[in-house]
Length: 210
Ligand code: GAR
Image 1: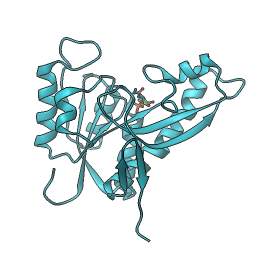
Image 2 (image 1 turned 45 degrees about the horizontal axis):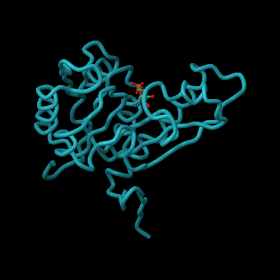
Image 3 (image 1 turned 180 degrees about the vertical axis):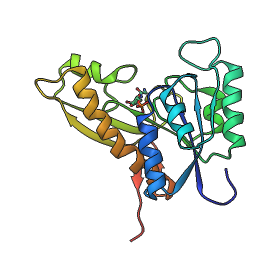
Image 4 (image 1 turned 90 degrees about the horizontal axis):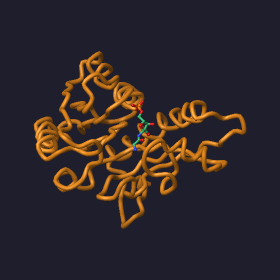
């Protein structure tokens, strides 16, 4: 953890980077009292790396190694080393499509957050908005949660609902979920950076000074 100075975020992503953009805007506007210290990606040609570079944020592509859904041991050690070198206080997963476990979560226990495109615990895993549409739910949404050893299982910090319309396609539903993600993720990170989120068991509480 950084000894002093601003709260430092390390953002990990694999894709477009629209959540990264909303977090970077929140930091620049002062809505999130933090700075983005580092962006890491397992995809060399990802939008998130391009966006971060354009903003002058330090970036690194770290190859994930031999597995399809997780980091191998060498890659995991490289991710940890890069985040430690950058003195990151909070690891922010923004569309990082690898499961983090073991050593990574031991090192950053209670300091990793994720955004997921459904109202967890419904529809964990891949393409959650499609799962929701196919299941026929009338309301879905997105969830910000702490990351623990289970997949999409950690304590919930924030959620926003999105109504499913009769004429929705997967694309139109995902677009509205993304809009909601871009509201709740920066807001949740701001609360954490302010030290306002307290976790007791599976529940989290937003404590604000009276
Ligand atoms: C977001 O919709 C996020 O919820 C999802 O990836 C997308 C990344 O978009 N994450 C997961 O599904 C994790 N299980 P972005 O690259 O534009 O931020």
